[in-house]
Length: 135
Image (cartoon, rainbow, N blue to C red; front, side, top):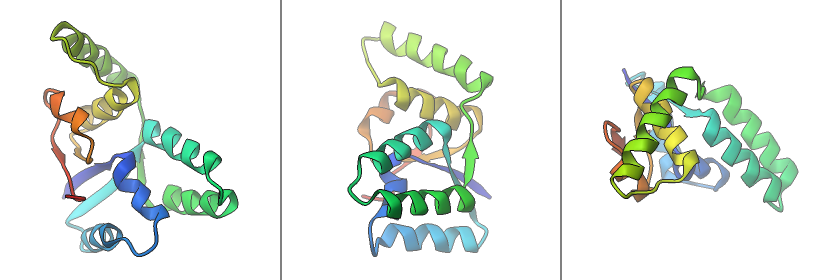
């Protein structure tokens, strides 16, 4: 079974009506060929989206459904160590990636997850496997 970590730009499909990505993920999950989830760092970004939205109550409910439906992988001690390694490596090579993106990448790497993202910033991160299902 392939394990996928949803980046914010992929999981935000849930907040949009009639997204073809939602159907693709549900089909893969129900056939048990893949398992999907998100990191606690992504969860923080999602809560920010909910709080700044004009449909607060509706989006709280949608996010609660996500919490019940998908696995959450924590930014734990192992991921924190990987974060430090990645940030040091990228800075030394003159590249800068946002800390929250490095946290998400560290969770993916330490848990052997494929990151589903459309964010090109992740292309610079060594040892990260990513796919873009929005392309």
